[in-house]
Length: 126
Image (tube, rainbow, N blue to C red; front, side):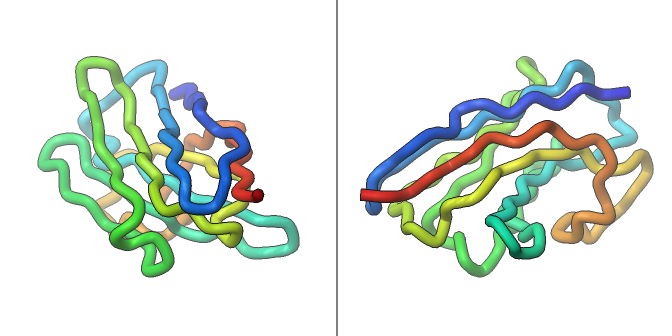
């Protein structure tokens, strides 16, 4: 099973930036995408962003469009989430996951993923 490790979380002031990393122990062509999701206390897990490995197609949740950018480095089996103009409401545990084998989408739904990392805490506060 693929191991997924997130890093880069921390405390940042409103308006600041942070870059998260998601590194996979291995990659298979049958798993087309990596997605980022977040969950704040007492809320449902929310879709943040996703990217496909081969074509680099991206998709974003409405609340982060224009502020967050997802990218990939296939040679490092790593996906990045660059977060800018951060707001207090972005505070959450951010988790990444790989899509299920042979799953064709949509990649904005969490049920399309099956290998999850432990998550990394992002806190936006002054």
